[in-house]
Image (cartoon, rainbow, N blue to C red; front, side, top):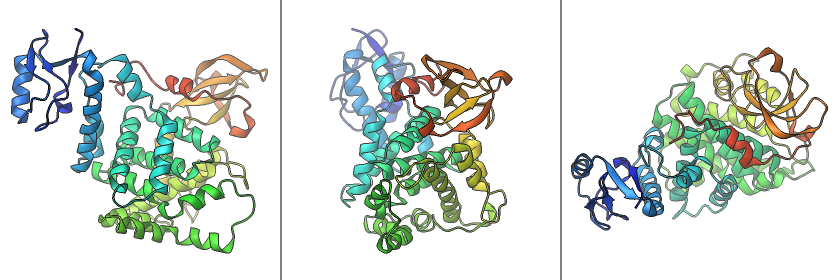
Length: 409
C-alpha cells in the first residue's frame, strides 16, 4: 500500500466517501461510503490520524471527487479565489494527477468552449459554463504564463473555433488584470470572467465564419455584429442569468466611452476592461481578410483611449500580460527569433525560448534566454506568419512551469 496525503478541503461533507480514509500508518479511519457528517468530525479524524491519507490506487476516485468539489464551490457561489485555493493535497498527490492538472488539454477546452457557446440549452448552459470557468480559473491561477501562452498561440493559429478561443483569452486576460493589477474583489473577478466568456453568445457561429471569410461583411452580417451585445444579454437573461452587473457588462462591452474608471459604475468598469481586452485579442488573431497585428502594436492600440490618452483598463492589461506576451514571437539583439514563455520582472523583459538561431535555422532544442540581460534584449515583435517553425504546444507549455513556483501543488 502506498499512501498519499489529502486535504480536508477536498472531502465532501454529508456525502458518501468514494474511497477509504486512513491515518499516516495505514490504519482505517473511515471506510468507503462512510458519510462525514460535519467539518468537526473530519478535523477530528485528521488530528487523530496525523493527517488524512488514501491509497494511491484510489487516487483516481479522489481526483473525480475533487473535481466535483470544485463544481460544488461554483454552485455555492464561492469566489474564484476560494476555488483556486482549494488543493487536492498538502503535498503532490501523484505525478500523474499533477501532470493532468498543470498541463490541461487545451484542444479539449476549446471544444468545451465551442460546444457551450453554440449549444445554449437553458437546462444545461449555466452548469456547463461553471465547469469551464472552474478549469480556466484554476489554470490561470496555477500557471498564468502557460494559460496565456496556450490561448494566444491557439488564437493565432486556429480559426475553426475562433469565437470560443477568443472569448476564453479575453476572460483570462480580464481575470488576471482584475486580480493582479486592479485589485478587484474576487466577486468582481468572477463576474468579469463570466461576462467575457458570454459577451458574444449571440454571434458565435457568425464570428467563426467571419474568421475565414474573405469578402467584406454583408448588410445582414453588419447588423448582427452591431446588435450582438444586446442580443447576448437577452439570451443570458432568458437562460436564467439575473445578475445585473453581468448582464450590463455584456450589454455595454462595445461601448466606447473614454474617461477615468473611477467615474464608472461597476458594470461599466467590467465592460471597459472587457472592451479593451476584446480589442487586443481581436488584433492578435489573423483572419482570411486580414493579417494579424504584431502583439506590441496591438497593445499600443489598447493602451490609448478614443482621445489618444492613457486608458486605465488598457494600461492594466499591459501590466498584466506584458508588452511581449507568452505565446508571441520576438527578435533578440542576437538576431535570434524566440517565443515568449514567461512574463518578466517588467513588461518588456520576458523569459523566452530561442527557436531560430542567428543564421535563420531552427534550433534543435529551445534555448532559454532572459531578455533583462542586455545581450539578449528584445528589439522587435515578430508576426506568427513570419516564423516558419512549428510549435509543439505541450513542449512549450512545460517551459512555462517553474519547479519552485507556488503555482504547482
